[in-house]
Length: 225
Image 1 (cartoon, one colour):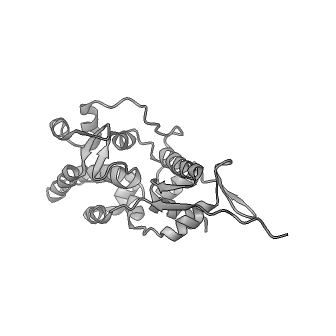
Image 2: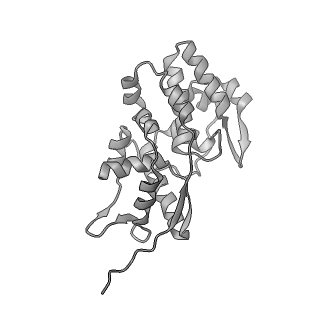
Image 3: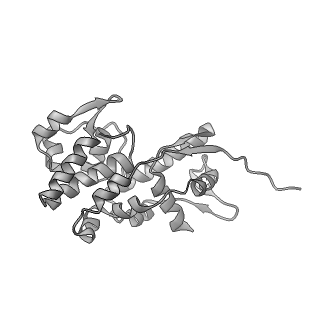
């Protein structure tokens, strides 16, 4: 009897333009200090996406058991493994779900090192979500770098990575969800949940766009290899 053939599914992966983020990351003066505070974001940005590898990996995802099933074993990405890959501790096991109340402008200002007036002036709505245009944040980050305000620059840069790379939604836009994840410091459980959710939904339909952080998913695959 011939072994049962696995039905392959067609996926496409959201292409992320990260060159500008990489250029901003090169302006960080003390990268070791940055890594200890914000994790291995610079390393993730440098990861090149190999769509073929990811397409093969996702073929083995089991929607029923929420894991990757291979002939002789199963893989379950865990919080501890994501924590190790990202380089950040697990500060909370409850991921962001999108129903959290929007923070006040003064709270955003305190967390991001932006001025309240700047936030109020630049906050816009796209796709039904409030947020800040990437153009404004990039310009602000460059100004802070030139003024050698390293802590402020790193905060804005990290916010950009969250909005444009880890949790991309609307092009060139850092939406309120990314801002709240950044403020609440729940990156590890949220990124794990986002990975599972994105793959599970696309697997259920049998095709579609995988919108989670695809370079990060590739790092997960490499860490298991």
